[in-house]
Image (tube, rainbow, N blue to C red; front, side, top):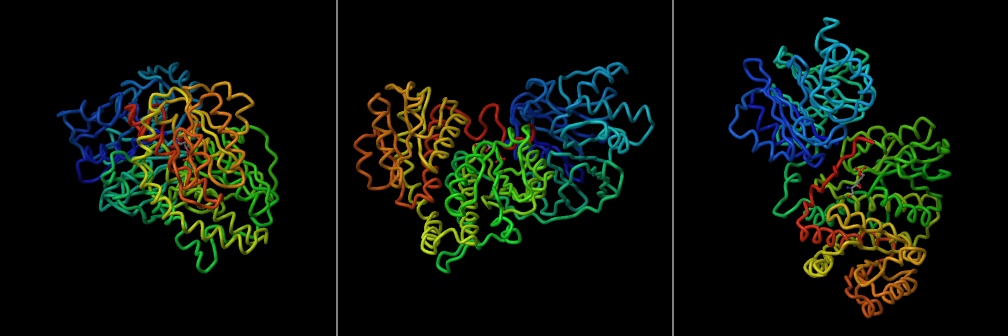
Length: 614
Ligand code: M6R
C-alpha cells in the first residue's frame, strides 16, 4: 500500500506531485506529504494527516517552488496516521528526505543500533529508520549518497520502494525497489516516478519498470542510470504504456465505483475480444497458448488469491472441475504461504490479482516457483509484478480500476477463468461440442445482458433504500453462486460497514439460521438451474423465521416472487455465466446503500486498493 511519486525536470514539481498523489490515493489515504527541493538547496517538507485535499489546504499559499520533489500518500502500518508519522521522513541532519512504500521488517534492531549511535527519532515509522541508516552510513563511511543507499538496502529486510532527495545533491533523485512497485516515466529532460503509471500517463507513455533490488539514479544533467544493489550496471528497458488518460477520470459518474460497475459490458467485451469467437466456435488465450499442453496434463490446479480475487478463484473451481475435469484447490494466499503445502512439478498454480502487486499472492507464487510448479497469472494491471514473475498468463483487460471495491476487475477475472476452463476442457476432450458451443454463445451474450441489467438500476436503488439502516445482512447462494454470495457480502461490508456474511444456502441451518429475525435482510441468488428447487426451500426456511428476502432471480420467475419481499431479475442465462450476471445487482446494492449511509465508497476506511504489505 501507500503511493509514492517523484519528479525531476524543468517544470514546477508541486502541481505534478499533488496531482500524482491524487491519482495514487486509492493506495492509501490516511495521511499525505511532499518534499520540495528549493533553489537555495533547502528541502521544504509538508505533511498532513488526512487525504491529499487536506494536504493541499494545509499548504495553502506557502512557498511551493522547486523543480525536484517527492510525495507520499500513506496507508499506516507502523505508527498511527498522524502528521508526524506521515511521509516524507528526513535524516537527523535534515539533508536527506525519503518516501517509502513497504515495510522494513528489521527496523527495530536497526533503530536500537542507531539510537546507540546518537540518532533520535521523531516518528514511530520504519521508514524514518531507513533514512537515518542511509545518513549514518554516508557519514561514517564517507561514501556517496548512492553508495550509502546501496549499502543500507543490503542491510534491510522486507519490502521497499523508496525515492530519496538530498539538499547536498539538488540535481539528483534516487529510487530503489524490492517487492513494492516503482515506475519511472521518461520525459524530455524530465523524469517522473510513481508506484504505478497512473500519475505518469498524462506526461509520457515511455516508462521503465524498476525491477527488484535495482537502484535508479536520475541526474538532471546525465539522465537515468540503473544499478543493482549488488552494484552491477543494468540497461534500462523502456516500454510504452497502453493506458489512456480518460480511463483515469470519473467521466460524469459520481464515483469511480459506479463508473466501473457501468463499464462492465465494455470491460468484459475487451476481455474476450480476439480470444473468443462463438460464430467460428473457438476460444484461445494467447498468453497461455505455449503452456496449454502442460495445463491440460496438470494433476491439479492450485488457485491462490486474496479478497475478491479469491472469490473469483472459488467460481473457477466449478469451471475447471466441470469443464476440464482437473481437480482444483483454491487457497487464500496468506494462508498458503505459511503452511507447508505439497506442491508437485506438474501442478499448475494460478494467481489471480487485480493489482498484480498483492504481497501475500506474490509470496505464495514465489514459494510455488521454488517447488517447481508452473505459474500462471490472471492480472489486470499490465506490467505489474505478478504478470512478470509468472511463466505465462492472461490479462483481464478491465482497464484501470480506481474504486477500492473490486467490481469490473472481478467480473473480468471470471470471464478469463471461464475462457481458460473452456480452452482446457476442449483440449482435454472433457466437454462436448454442443456444450462448448452453447457456453461460447452464452459468453458472447454477456455484455448485452449486463447492459440490460443495468437499465434496472433505479429499481435496485429503491430496493437498496429499504435496507440502508440494516446492521447485519446474510447472503446465500448454492453451487457457483455461493462464491457470489461471499462477494456480495464482502462488497457490502467493505464500503457500507454493515456486517454481512455469505453462506452456501444449505449451510444456513447449521448455525446462521439462528440470526434470522424480522430485521435480517437475506440476499439470495435463486436463479434457474440445477439448484433452483433447493434454493426455493431455503427461502421458505428464511421466510418461516420472518427474515426479509431479497432474491436475485431469472427474469420471468414467479415461484420466488411469491415468497420474497423483493426480487431483482437478471436476464435468462446458462448457469455457467450466472455468477457474472448475479454479481452486478449485488454491486449496485452495496454501492447505493453505502452512498445512502454517507460512506466514502471509493475510499472506504482502513482499506487500500493495492495491498503490498502482508
Ligand atoms: O489486487 P488484488 O486482486 O490481488 O487484491 C486482492 C484484494 O485485496 C481485493 O480483492 C480486495 O478484497 C478488494 N477491496 C475487494 O473489493
